[in-house]
Image (spheres, rainbow, N blue to C red):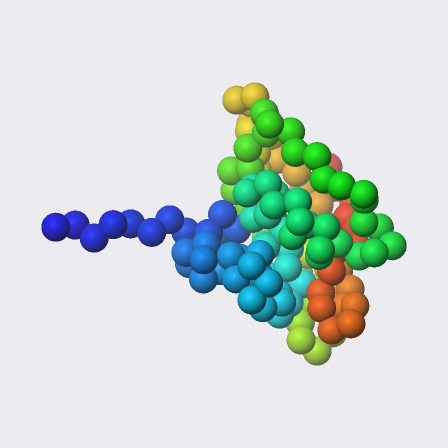
Length: 131
């Protein structure tokens, strides 16, 4: 009998969701790096997890809520560059391209995101769109 295939995490890493971003979403652990937080936030957008997104947003830039467009589906993530953002840093940036389909039409979001450590935990501050 063939072994069932476990889908990989939406963030693009070759691990099952439960062992990858799912552990951050369930608050079993905090993301250890800015890149891990960015990947887990992408996954939260893909899974429409507003609570996680708000919990990992810097309090100075956090919106009152997150609205999800029902016609938009996130289809892939490519991390292009990281600067700092490790366990030895207090800040970091992650440049990425997130692919999506909006009403069946393909598109991509290209952004350089800023992250800070607040009380020991990585949080998203803001991002600059790149054309």
